Image (tube, rainbow, N blue to C red; front, side):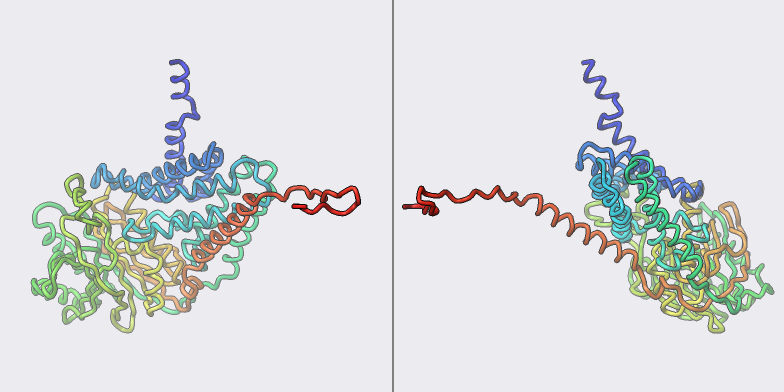
Length: 527
């Protein structure tokens, strides 16, 4: 009995390890908004790495990886708990399983007493494995790339220069490499030279990006206004929100705005079904001298289903430019495999009816040749969507969002920060307009333009946004860090396979000289 009690409370007991791994996996979240301790990302993975490295077996290391991934996903999405309840834990456990192979990889490369050569390989393989995880979970069916590790550096200028070269992927890769090197410095004295060399390479990469990556050139400015009505709840909230947005927009008359942006779901009715609203929007465009980009969240009259659509309205009414949201929020806007997971609607606030998807991205002419690329809500988390809009000629990227459901959480700040990365990646300014905050604007280098409109604001603000020309390496080359990471993993896997074959091959036995007869000739079997 005493022995059993000792095993249960021992730090090496399985449940202790699991709890420690989950806690260690949650630590990186402190580097993201709202805590915003960006520097913490350089060491946040170290406790997790040390725990997994010291696992007694590869299977236990994989389990520690899963537990850590569960902790990371739960901490990153904890603000979903009031809405999805217990299903938040289910999602965190499912997504956390992506880190099980990574845990095994850590143990395989850094476990025991690795040679300096093996440590050098680990500094390439472990970041590559992390990028493979981020690639898989970037599929919108798994929740999309919310909380990519590199996104924690959204306000660090050198990191934003890296984003222009290789997107948020390159930042994630280097952060994981730095964490692995620090873990080696702490735990493996024999390999400290390799760890220091790895840190030096990371420093050189950041310095090279800062010094040699061309900065976007700016030649003119446009005035873009963001209208944020604030929280409007209760009966007839859609009508009362429209009234508030109309009031705030009228205040922009005479301010010289070139474009006015409303947030996601800013219009709760189909404009063909409610022509009076379309006329009111056209009147606002005439009063302010600017086009309006609104977002209609309603059942369509021209096709079945509910869509979320960015609609451009001019002095004569809707211009015909329309973008239907393509990537929907799982459970928030549709339920994946509803026949199996429809029960989520009974335990949380999952979508009662699936929204419909658009089929293509759209670049719109907002007037006077100003080309804009709209996205809706968490589409701003996807690097490829903003990159394709920049390739398609968009001069300004726009995200229309609403995080009012999560008003008192970290979600609004996390969401607003993503626009800085998308701006830096593409070399295009980006506008993040919301219903209830945080609304923000960033220039082509990812630096903030003007003030944030926080979650307590109900206001309209005009930003002088510098336009940029040219193209970043990331726009031209795409997600090359991901492809490089997959090549590293493939090469490492092939090398490990060859090594395993060599170990399994039986060693040749000692050569025995042939027996000789008394006459000195070799004996012949069978004679």
